[in-house]
Length: 375
Picture 1 (cartoon, rainbow, N blue to C red):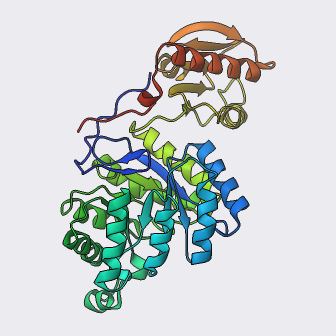
Picture 2 (cartoon, one colour):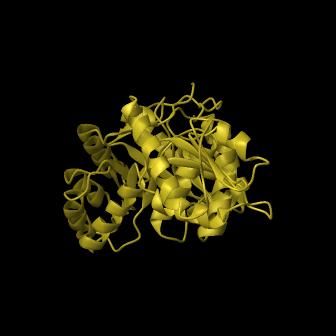
């Protein structure tokens, strides 16, 4: 019963990061970055696979040396998800990972050096169909921009980004995306708003160095939520000092809350009060853990009493409403059957899984599991 989002997306040029379209009318992709030592191939592959299992569309890997580039080749051979190589300064590393099948280069042209080095990387990217990501951070602005503006500002971030854009324009290479990240929500939002008006390329959103799991989630949700509500943003990364899998979960939760994308269950649950007829919090914790594997878009309502329960349950694919003496389960918005508190968790999980399976049988093509917005 998930509805289409009313948000109208900013029109942007579409690029492809491997099999994943970014920009245009493509769904907003969710990505993360490994935090393992890249030369530890086994650990990095294991983390990438965990991110894939969580639903990651794209994964970025830091490649700081030629040794790491050789490790990247072995990593690339063992995973399916599109990989972005994060490279700074040394154009030879970019050329090497391009040879090894990278799907996107995160490399700022202005940091590579002479024009001949920049041209070599761009010619290689053009030949192999590899897009480039320009990434500007408030914490690493050029010294001249720091002198000009005195401190990081939205205008400084955008000027830095446009300098790199000008280099790609000079070499007639339009297949790139751009990020202008700051840890300050207001600065990041203002920078993205400015940049969105000046280029046609897709924008990679993020609040950089947002913090730990709770604080970083809040800052990212506020900042990215403001931009996404305005139709700005084509791919997102939630930067958390936490397990990267949590970044994917938070990213999808932000998109689900705005009805921009559906990847699994959207839970509607009350915070619980003395009217509850079952342990709402314990039930929700258990359901979220048990049902993480479901990718079918569906709404599940878990409400502890009959005050709001029936109304929420009627709008969900599956709903549980607390009542006395028995709780009531809704399916497809209609009262279906009653159940007692004794061992109802296993039963509710079964009902949800059966409903998800029926949604799939009724013809939901996997491509349609992502909700596209107008524009």
